[in-house]
Image 1 (cartoon, helix red, strand yellow):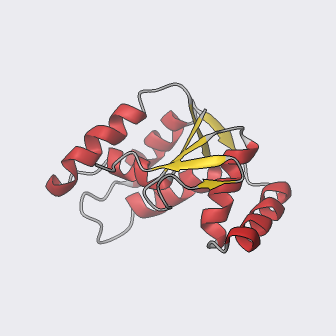
Image 2 (image 1 turned 45 degrees about the vertical axis):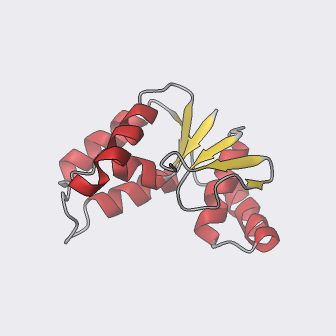
Length: 136
């Protein structure tokens, strides 16, 4: 099982020409059926994709349809257990809370891989290995 970080979702909807290669990779990833997400990732996607000033900004309706379509994957809800685990991951690895919450969500879902360009490629955090799918 692979956990998908917000940047994969954002690249999947990008219309920026310089991101075309990443867009293809992200769309290919989202065609798989072994993926998991968290409510946090879906929230971050919605906020960033509909942000005023964003190139290729999505409407509320477009972003909502995409979020609904990604609910076909396993999605971890935000819970007190996730919060506590993320706080411990943050302390242990000295990460931002938000990165720690992503790692903890992946761990709780039993994912062995976290697809993200935001953390160190190849590094493992509590049994979850980060893979940057856009790395060349």
